[in-house]
Image (tube, rainbow, N blue to C red; front, top):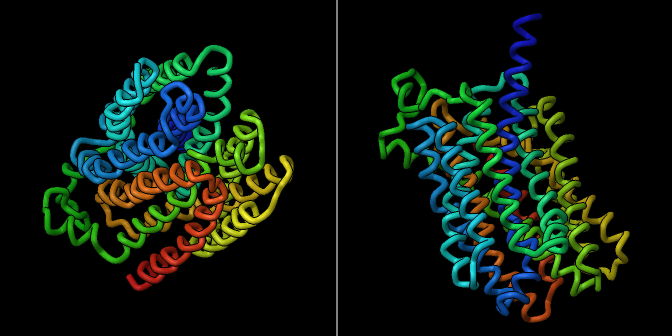
Length: 405
């Protein structure tokens, strides 16, 4: 009983600290998008120009994430995670001090570099530190906290901006990130995992320093399918997260507060789905079925929103339901990637496949911003439905490859 209690206590602490870091990562991703209407008026720029800020953040994150994965495997996850969170927090603080739109561009790149570390570092810590029989719930906690970070951003940022102004709101966000860094320094000293470079000689491990082996690993059919899964998934959801507020204001004539609550409702629905999906992921080996069913269901809800004139209440119900359906797939998604990952390569593989999230997130905001500038807010929901449907094809491919292996 003592050993079991110790194991549970350690697992809960690991999940809590890693979850807090992931909360901050997702929260920071929506700090600027939540305030796009304020920035649109302040700097007199188009939504396409504002979409470029998001594209730069996710582009820098995506291009750096695989490198961050190698750094995690070589130097250990905790120190890389703390460095990235500190950089992201400081870049966010600087957003609040920007005097013009052009100053936001390099800061978005710096924020993206900081954001690149979270998935390879977080998932490497969870994989190495959480008990195997709780790993599905560990992945679920990680994803749940991330989505709660997304959910917190629209309402919190707009509320603070309306009480004071948008600059104070952003500076407060940066200070939140630095407080999480302090929590890691105080309570997470023993979360450092053994760098993969130190165990590369262990039987069955993929050496971190051999270029040819790494290329064959990361560009295998299975890992590329995982990468595409994340790219299509992020392409589906990024429009709702970044341009859902202005799209709903234009399409359904909602107030700013109503639109922000709807985006929060979608993200809270996603968080609830992740909780349910975490329990399901620990009770089945057919994670592909959960992923496919959830994506198809979410796509149908998005299509319904795009093609119907909905009142505020029904729109909120549809968005919460879509979020719930897509959220249930998240823990099963991570279990599929884990099944495809060789021992000792979790940082590299998670870093590479999760860079697909940033790839999809970097390309779509420009298109969605342009669509809004052209007077087509419904495109936000049509694109979400289309990409969610396409995502199911990559799940099928990953399942076939894992079974064949």
